[in-house]
Amino acid sequence: MILLLDIGNTNTHVGVANEKRVLKNTNIPTEELLRGKAGKAIGALVAGKKIKSAALASVVPRATRPALSLLQRRWGVEPLVLNAQTVTRIGVVYPNPESIGADRLANAVAAKEHFGAPSVVVDFGTAVTFDIIDRNGNYIGGIIAPGLAAMTSYLHEKTALLPKINIRETKAAVGKSTEEAMLIGALHGYRGLVRELVSRLKQHLESPALPVVATGGYAKLMAKGLPEITAVQPLLTLEGLRLVQSDQRSR
Image 1 (cartoon, rainbow, N blue to C red):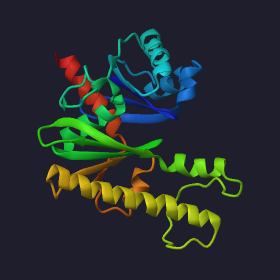
Image 2: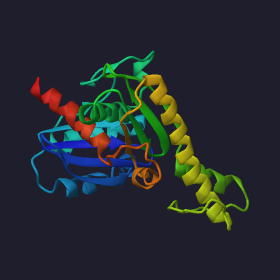
Image 3: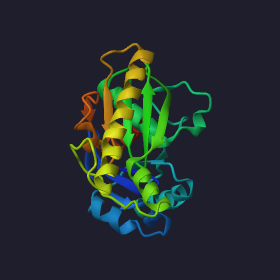
């Protein structure tokens, strides 16, 4: 079995996979990794399975070392750390490859493998990120915008009267309450953002039928009103990690 860790700013996504797919997954607060308290939750997911290898993608440098230490100490594996030097299945055509988030590389690997090239990944996480794979199978760059929760939380924290809201579907076009007005701005506003950026990317890549794959916490919700999104894959990042780790094992 392969143990997979996608370490994000808020949560760490943990998966157990075999050579074909991700079998089980869970989320834990990244803070638990930083405090050395993630072993119990990860151990519960593993549930006695024999871990033969591991891979991790981290966008939180100070959490990488504790994660490596935990995997080495508890499961006796030397994890693959995904970066521009260790990634497989895609090329990287980018001025400063070391600056690309490892999760974005994992997304690109899985998107190319399952949806071909060119393709685009939209990750609705703490930030909304677009990752672009050209027709030659190269990661060529991306787009970054604030995440939905980050935007609404910022409005709540920086204003006296705007509440903290739970992001959910709304069909309204005009808000009849402050909360509803914020929901419209978040949902319909961000759908408009995605629609416009996808339109520009289709032109740039000369691909009218461009595959657009959504992942991340709000992927399913956002995709409901976006026919431009052609697939929703909640485990895309873990799948990309699995593919790269499988390549390393087969060498």
